[in-house]
Amino acid sequence: MRMERDPEATGPLIRGFAGRGYRVDDRVHDGGMLLTPERAIDWVAPAVDLLTMADMEGALALSPLPEFILLGTGAQLARPPVDLVLALEALGVGIEAMDSRAAARAWGLLRAEQRWIAALLYPLS
Image (cartoon, rainbow, N blue to C red; front, side, top):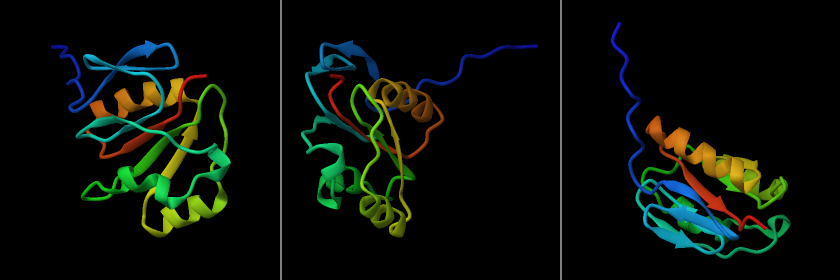
C-alpha cells in the first residue's frame, strides 16, 4: 500500500495566531480578516449581532459565489442575525458561525479539499 500526503490548500493559508490576529503565509493580520481562495485582507466589522449584507460584500464578491462563509466570531461563539442568515440563504450561500480559532482551523481543512468558501474572522480577543 502506498501512502501519499494530502495536497496542501491553495491560496492564503493561516499558519498560526499572532496576538489578536492571524499569521497568513508571510504576513501578520493584527485583527479581523477576510479570506477568500484568492486573497487575505484586513477586515473590520461591527458587533456580530449588527452584521448586515453590506459587511459580507468582500466574501460575496467571489465568482462563483462561495458555497458558504465561515464566520469566526472571536473568542466565543456568537450567532449572526437571523435576517442576515436568511438573506445569504436566499442567494444560495450558507454561513457557519464558530469561534475564530475553530474557523481558522476549518479554513485550512476545507481549502485542502479545494472547497470554494470565504471566511470572515473577528479578532481573537
